[in-house]
Amino acid sequence: MSTCRSSSLMSWGKSSLARLAPLNSTQFAAAPRRFYAVASGSTRFQVFDRRVKWLQKERAASNAEESRQADYLKDEVAIRLTERLLDIKRHFPKVLDLGANSCNVAKALTRENPDPDPNTPLSPSLSDRIGELIATDSSETRLYRDASHDFNKKIAITRQVVDDEETVSFEPESFDLVLSSLSLHWINDLPGVLSQINNILKPDCPFIGAMLGGDTLFELRTSLQLAEQERRGGMSPHVSPLADVRDVGGLLQKAGFKMLTVDVDDIIVDYPDTFALMQDLQAMGESNAILNREMGPIRRDVLLANDAIYRALHGNPDGSIPATFRIIYMIGWREGENQPKPLARGSGETNLKDILEKKE
Figure 1: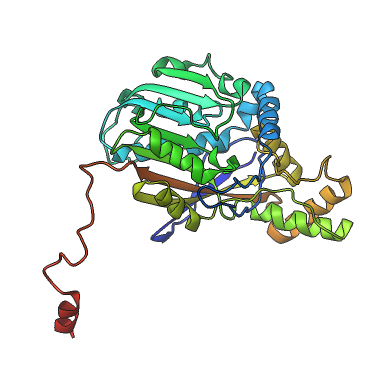
Figure 2: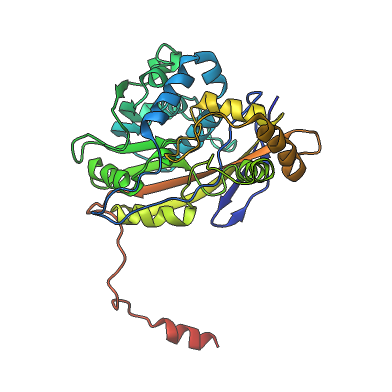
């Protein structure tokens, strides 16, 4: 069985590792990726083949049971994302789940007692604070995969298949909350999508998102590069560029969001080998979709070398291999009249210099 460990890398530093419940027997891989953005008004920079990504998601979801077994990461991140709603004490009449995958967020919202603090009283599910949830995804098979499951009876959910998540086709100021969990890392025009999300939010309403970023699956990236260099004398792109946490705050700000919060969570999953990891990557619909990727499967000798190098560089003492998933969580608010705002420059009555001089 593979296991999952978690460490939070918040602004105040790294916490101790916490052991999570065993997940599935295999898992996925993807490597650190740098985000490419273009200035507003310029031609959009294309990194991903969106049609290939749609085909991957459709193909993965067509095997419903295998797809569900590989949903451990999406389920866990959806839970951690929705827990952020515990700090926002309000009702949300109309909510959008952008890039809903198999409605992992909707399922997380229906959990009983979502507050993980054992010192607080039991609380009702977060779905009690949701009026209507609209879940969108480009993959119909994935979106409707669990439509008959019990959690659908606990929340007013409407599924909506869209042509592409890069176009957010809703009326301005029509949502009280927008959520997005593990979907934005496949978006070509992330600045544009964030701007569209801000546009459809009502004033003083939040967007809460989670995406893969930073050093996600750095272990696989390094071992695969070394294996290809050894066996082929060169390297080809097998992993996608990912946003760095330092980029995300700036992107949210440029999109018009206020009162920003960005934090990072590392989830480390142990696998029996790299073949199991890649198998789960496919079952998640998270395979490589870079436009200039090399067509066809990776050569077997490269895969065998990759497994050996991965174990040598990163392997665990028990023979398993760790894979790191860095999750970037973000919260941004649509500007509103009643939001707290910084005072105008020069409006302070006390000079900081005078205070510091007195202490000396």
